[in-house]
Length: 370
Image 1 (cartoon, helix red, strand yellow):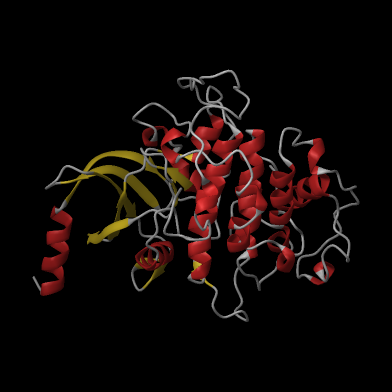
Image 2: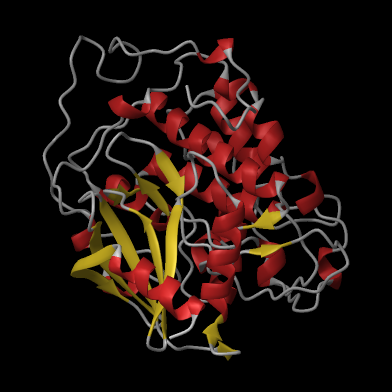
C-alpha cells in the first residue's frame, strides 16, 4: 500500500456511516458520524456516472468548489475519501431544507422570517459570485437549514466558474421551475444573473407558500413565466428573439406583482421585480440586493435561532429519495408537523420581541450573519 492509499484508508476510518437517508441516480446520502468525537455528519457517496478519468463530473465540481468556498451560508465539506470505485464527500449534517419548511403548512411565516432567509441566501450567493462561481441549481431543496436556523447553500454538482465571459456553457442546468427564460431560449453565454432569477423564484415561493412558476415542460415553463410577468418586448429584453432556441410563445399582458403578492411590502415587490427582470444585464446582483432598501426597512430580519423550523429530528430521512442529486422537479405536497406557536397580539408579522438591528452592520459583508 503506497502513501496515498494509506492516507485515504486513515481518512476513511475517521467516519462511520449510520444509515441511508436518500438515494438518487448518481449518489447515495448517508447519515454518519465522526468515530472519535461522535459528531453527526452527512456522507454523500458518488456512484460511477459520467466518467472522466474515473470520476463523476458532478463529484469533481462539488469537491473543487466546496474546497474553495468557506462561508457560514455555504455547506461545509469536511473530508473526501475514496472507497472501491466510489468517491465519498463528508459534509456537515444539516437538519432540514427550505423546501420542507415551506411545505409545512403548520408553520407560520412572518415577514421578518422571509427577510432572514433571503438575506442568508443572498449572502451565500454573493460569496459564490465574488469568487466567480455559478451555482446553477438554486431551489428550496438545495437551501439546507442547520439546527441553529442558519441557511446554507448546498449541492454544487452543477456549479462552474465563469471568469471567462466568452466561454460557452450548457443551457441544460437549473431545475425547470427556477430556470430563467434566457436558458429556456438556449442561451449559451451567461453569468451570475441566472442564479438571481432562481433566487427571485424562491423569494416568491416563500411569500406564496407554493412554487411560483411551475411549468410542466420547457415550452410550458416559458408560457407560465410570460403569463405571470407578461410577454417581453424588444424594449424589455433587447435581442431575446435572436437567442438560439427562441420561438414565439404567445402574447400575455403584464400583471402587476401586487395583484398576486397582496401582503408584500413595496420594498419586497421592488426587490422581487429586480430579481425577475427579463434582461439578464439589468437583473440585480447579489451584492446590490444585499444593499436593497428591503433589508433595511422594518421589520428587521429574524435571528436564525428564532426562525420557524420542522420539529422532528429525522427531517433528512424524510427527504424524497430522488432529491439527493439536486436535479428533481419540486413537489408541492405539504407535510404535517408541529405548529409554531406565536406570542403577542400581532400574529400577522410585526410584534414578537425578536427584532434585530440589521442596519448597524454591512449587510454585504459575508463574514457577519445578523
